Image (cartoon, rainbow, N blue to C red; front, side, top):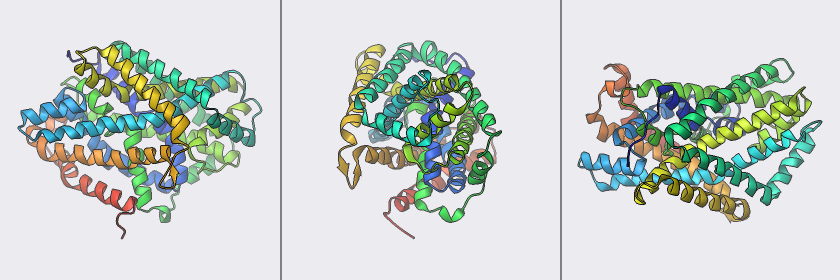
Length: 446
């Protein structure tokens, strides 16, 4: 297959940020923060983003650039060229499986966002109070038909973008969508600063109660950092294969993490002032933004248009992440059917639609180990498979690929920073992640 690439470093950066920035920042980050102690979780999350997710993101982009393909084929090529065991290809399969499992629940939530964009345009939020907003969200979750339509629309748009290829589809879409979403988030945060609740939200986020931190919070923060930044879920790896060799992997990785973390913090400054202004529970779970934002938009002058723009742009950001999830699967499938990219994209999109419908109609009603199957799948993919994938990436790059690398290959000069990166990959991160996994899941305790 002919290897594609992004036209410019800005296009690649927007695609990487587009994959990272989405529901993980604006939907998942606020409710995970609320459920895990507010500012205490934020501190742990920032540490995980800087010292765990960033080094592994650099390593993952290196694997993509060196392997020149999606994870499975990259590992086959790298293992073959380095005369390593063919079993290393299972690491690539692990990444692809993680991406697919995440998408099953992700596409459903993206459908909710798109539906709320339609509701906003019809003026359904005008005069809405917190009780009616919470009730409306419960009605949506009970309406499986409309959820199915939402998922179908989201996946159809993603399919159109993937059909356009790397430059004509992915790069063109994200260079428009991401700056617009960022500007809207900044505007909403500035708007909140002029109304009650902003000071309380700042206090909630910036005055951590460190007594709330335990192993489960640490594991949740690692999972959120990986989910939000897009680490160990195949997309960044595949985008790395499209990255020209003259681009600094270190610089791009730092910019992605800064942008991603900045958007998550902005989301907190958009959501939590509204939570406290309207007397809602910050630990409101997966429905937090769907219960809070409609009430706020309903009180604003021009709220119909702001709400419509927000939910549509958030839906598009979610779609850009879905494109990143599907892309490595498409590349892998296209190779097995003679390079037919569009056929592969259609097949994977249809399969994802089927599993998303199962998620809507079946998985929520099936209990496994005391909770719904879709909750178990979310925990498995985000708090088990992502960290384990990070361990694999760190170990392979730190111990197997490192002898073939130089500091300049990732955009650094020889010195302490490069040596620290290797030390993190070889020792610190694998040990830290395994301990977090074992303590956070209750396998061991201290």
